[in-house]
Every structure is written in C-alpha cells, then in structure tokens.
Length: 382
Image 1 (cartoon, rainbow, N blue to C red):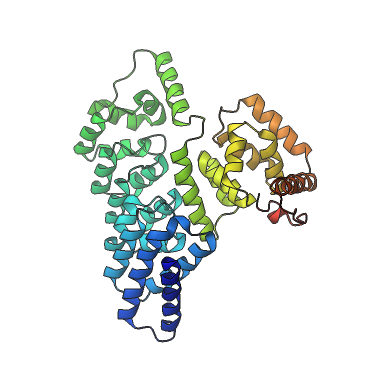
Image 2 (cartoon, rainbow, N blue to C red):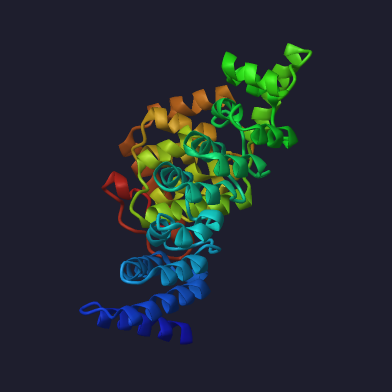
C-alpha cells in the first residue's frame, strides 16, 4: 500500500515538473523512481513497466551524468527492467553504461552488437567481461575491438568462441602474442572444428603459434566437431536460459520491436528460448502454456498457433527446428510438421485457436471471448 502511494506521488511530481523542469528536482525524482522500481519490479505488470519506462526516459534527458549512472546501477541487476531506458542508458557515456553492459540481462545480443559497432572501446571492454558472451557478440568484438577488449574476451571463460569468432580471431591473434597465450589456456575450444573453419592463412597462424595441434585422426576430429555442435545446440528446456530470454524479449516488446522479423532473427541465429518467448508474447498466452507445449512435444499446438499468427512456411520450419523441445526434432518430424502446417489454412487455424481459447476460459469458469477476426490478435489471454 505504501509502495502504491509512493508511486502515485512520484508520477504526480513528474507531471508537476513537466512544464518547467528544475534540474535539482528532476535529479531527486529520477533517483527515487528508479529506487522504487527496483523494489517493485517483480510485481509490476506490463502497463506499469511502460509507465516507468516513459518517465525515466524523459527524466534521463534532463539530469546530469551522476544521476543517470545511479539509475543504471539500480537497473543493472534487475531481471525485469524497462527496456527503452535500459537501452538508452547502455548507449550513454561509459560511466553510465558500464554496469548495464556488464550485468544487465535485459540487453539482447542485437543491442550489444549495435553498441560494439557504434560506441567506444571502453564499451566493448565492458561487454567482453559479461557473465555470458555469446559467439555472435564475441564475433562483433573481434571484428570491431582493439587490444583491451580482445584480451578481455579471450580471457573470459564464459565467452563462447565458435564459428562467429574464431576465423576472424585467428587473423587478429598474430598481431598480439598475449592473445595466443590466453587462447592456449582455454580448454573449451574444439581446435579440430576451428581448423576446418579458418582459411589457409588462419591455419598457418595456428601452426606458427602452436594453437591446436592437428589431430592424428581426421575421423576423430569430425566426430569431435559433431559432438561439440550437438552439445552447443542441445535440446531441452533450461529454466535459467528461459528466464533470461523471457526478460530480453519482454524488453524488446516494451520498445515495440517484437514482430515476425525479430522472431526470424532468433530462429536464424539458433536462439531457441528467445524464439519460444517471442511466440508466447505474440500469441498473448501465458508462458506456462508454451512451456507445456515444449515439454509434451506438442507439434500440433505450435503448428496451429504459428499458422494463426500468419507465419510463412519457411519461418515456421526454422522456428520448429530451434525451439527448446524436450527432444530435438528429427528431419522426419520437421518435414511432417511442415506438411501439416501447409495443409492448414490461416482461417482454419484461427478458428481452431479461438475454440481452444474459449474452452480454456470455460474451464476456469469465465465467459469465453468473442472470436478474433484479425490475424494479429488471434490469441487472446489464455
């Protein structure tokens, strides 16, 4: 109750300042609002998060660096934070951005790559030290980074060094013997796989620097690469990965940037949990509904839902291939599911989905909603 009263006063104070803002009052207000949000973030619904997002963004334009840095420190550890203001502050000067770049799970790989490409080496150094640096993000650092960010990336045991990173890294490592030394300390690199990924110049560098001696058995090397890729893209739902993906996709949705193109990017880069989270939000169903589909290998439900959303057959096939099912779908599974998808018309899918939704409401003793008529609104709350 006290928190609600405090929130109400905070928004009233902001509206009172909106005409002729006073910098000192804005400084106090943005700190108080960020502090309050850090206490109530887990209990805020989407509309409330959007309100905080709008106000914090406007206040951030009115206050000095120290206040923005204070807000960034408060938002950095939160699993659910307003997406627009987090991205805004992450693109700020490094004193403001650093805690978000190092710790915020709200920032997506696309957000981080954009910052790597367009901001300073200090920003890249901060990103290179994150608890998890994916191969895509690492590849961007290797392409755009300088010695400090490259060294921090290679020495970060939680940085994935794979197909996106290693070919370019082999070109950069010859310029910096310290990088070669750091690479020799890594025990997680499949050097046989790397050897197959790099060009002749890269293999020459590997030989000169003693990185990944050639395997005595080509067959063994290939088998190792298969096992490595299987583990890297393992099937199965992971609660921690889901939590991170869910909050990042929610933040993307806060910024009105969750659309079929975003889902296509998730699927193209193999982000299975992000793909499932995006589908959940676009359908406007509860997260546990989609998680249950994944656990039960319920291809039928996903087929109907995707067709009702108007997905293309190509995107649907990619979505099915990367979603975190209990077991990895085989080629026959994917082909059969696509045939069913193509045999089902969007209108039929919307009708089936509306019937399922109405049945779900009746089971909870609530009146069913009127059937949806627009493809974008096919899945009301379930």
